[in-house]
Length: 415
Image 1 (cartoon, rainbow, N blue to C red):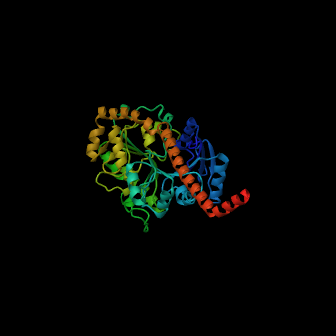
Image 2 (cartoon, rainbow, N blue to C red; image 1 turned 60 degrees about the vertical axis):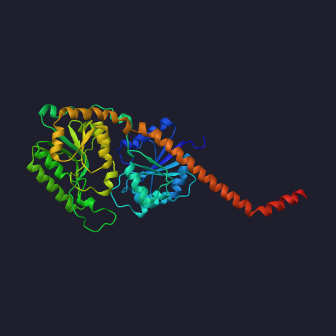
């Protein structure tokens, strides 16, 4: 089949421990070879992987295309990734006979000319949800663009959810335990200088500022466990962040526990001993940064694997709120008192936990890869039509330009 996808080149940042990168191996089930190209020095991808550098980018990609007979390029990432900030514009402007699909993940900044250029020049777009689709359609005028919606670009394989879990701590000590499994812990603060590329709300209402969440839960006799490293935008702010949260720990020493950044191999099992999770530091009544509504919490897969009921403040993440409420895997809370009322209902919590198993498949590569592969074939088919049209146009131009010469040649042969 002319439009069959036999091999794809995935270009994007990677980490030395990332379930989603390993998940690309599932493409082999559908006879699709995956080649990975990343600027990261260490990658968790277990297949064929090349290192992307600033030198001879186009030549390197063309060499890979020719060597591995690549049918499609899948460029993906977050707005702050090296792949997007440094390499994407050169990649997207390449003159190749194969289509380039751009997958856009987490976005918390103002849209830039660079992003618009990448989005407008891509042959296809993979976005997270209808809120992202509507936003970029208006901002980039891409109403005729072929768009595919997937809940995350970083999904694990279904096997990721099959693991042994720990017993809840509450069953032995009688206290409810909340876990906040984050990467960084910050404090909301004004930027040191003007930055037109980032919304001011990102600083004022910092989604990684968990101070209010921790304090309100501790005051209501909930044990709070937070994973992550303290981080400020400067060394001085990092130091102050540690100090502020340290004071909170002193005030609620029997209810607040900092576990640092988790470096183990099974984070889902580690956090499964707690009773529920809070997904963001933004609390009811705060104004979230504009882009947060279209984002997907990257820790969601781990939280689902740990079978933890999920709670999120109202009007913070439209997509996440819709997911949590529609699948009944947690609840949107309107105040801390309403949250406490829900988590103290054991029957309700157990129901949320049971429902979580029903969403494993929908949040796995096993569900989405066949659909994504079909989308890639559609993009390739459309791209082939475009190339055929161009080739025909060039042929017609050549023939019309050389028609007199051809007639003369034919006439001479006949005579």
